[in-house]
Image (cartoon, rainbow, N blue to C red):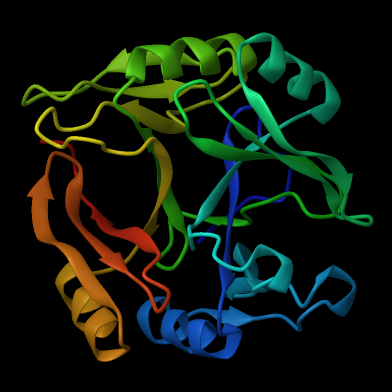
Length: 261
């Protein structure tokens, strides 16, 4: 396992979390599917807990807030920010919308939520004691985050302006896709792509992909644990992938990385 204990470079997807309608049920689901363990819930933060792989933080889970009843369950992606207020102003200047202003999370860090001009919601995280993902390149950890949107050009321009993303085109089959690298980043940090032209009304959304040893076996665990399969396993240039959904019908991907074809 590769451990990461320093703050991530600005603009890098550095954390993901999920609000669960039944926290115990969701914890058990991901325990069965991804082998997660959990630290103790934090009452001062609404019962929030961290999912752990070999003791390293890989994601967050939180009980549902009664004040947000009806909010769609999604794995929220957070982008690293060195100075969150400055980044927030750049978001507004570039045409984004603030949904939650920057807020202190005790000594852990600062966070907020925004919507980009293409319609996708993203968070930002300025590290304190909590630096974000602590495990990479290991089953159970996040292996990739990306944004899919019908308006990929607007999205790419926005994130390049706010975070300095540099893009490399990799798309095919008529669907545009580009990986992005952030300033001070040493490898692609994620991707931004278009949606299938035949998919009318496709949303703009950031998505998360978790690494597993074997995708087909992980999909079997999803079914056994009460989840569902959105897209059956398939091979692609970088490994094998499936899209599934958890207890609250939250969508996420499972990937077993392989050598590029």
